Length: 219
Image 1 (cartoon, rainbow, N blue to C red):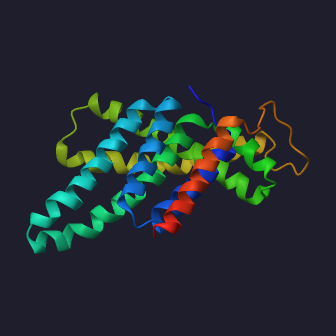
Image 2: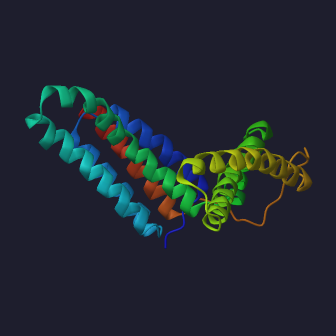
């Protein structure tokens, strides 16, 4: 599996946004999304790549083959939804790449390389750890509900109330853990993680810049 520098993933996220909103050529968009999906597969997230490819293909089919023959009332309702869903998919691909391949430690070390202020790194690192913790708590709540004969009408309340209580507790615990690890210490941080650009990183960035140029030329 290919391992990219976390900074490359962040740069690709910016490039993906730029390409998809600058371009007006469907061929460039399809090739760009295909390359991003290929990169996601090479990095080991094949299942996520297949799901996102299916969603993108469905959006293309609906917009270019279903809408031309559909009633105007249906097109007026769903056209904007499908169009913006298609625009967001490249960003979702790169976001999935970051979530699947980049750990919080690597992202923090990469941001420190870029001299990003601690006022941004601290809330970002805590937020990234927050959502997996909440997801784990939701799983525990579902398991507890399965052990009890709770009526269907009461499941919503039995789910929301514990989640709200757990969300507050989890945020306090993560903040305390970050402070305990010395994240607020203003001294220079060191890391055992080796953050450096490789050949694959330069190739990915160069391809992204090339697609920005193509999107501007064929706009």
